[in-house]
Length: 121
Image (cartoon, rainbow, N blue to C red; front, top):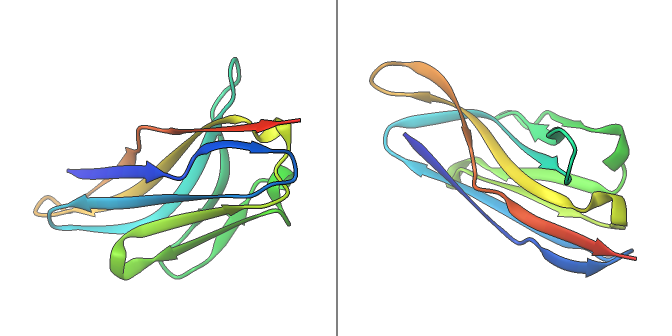
């Protein structure tokens, strides 16, 4: 099993910045892709950004140029730096990780508990 713990959400004014952190813990696992998703009230969960273990990144069009995803493989931690925040960015942000777990060598998808980001106008 892999546990994901997020931190860094909160309330910020439009134009401000926040940094989200997600750390993975568990026994005998190897994470491939890590990412951030978000779900606004009444909306479906959507991909914000993800990053492979090799550092390849992918962003939703709505956040390109404003958000930056990065990771520290040694710490099994992924970050999301969010700049120039807009009220439309208000949502619960969820960390996501695909991991190979030993001894089964199965690949599983894990989710964090979510952290609220609220951007006021």
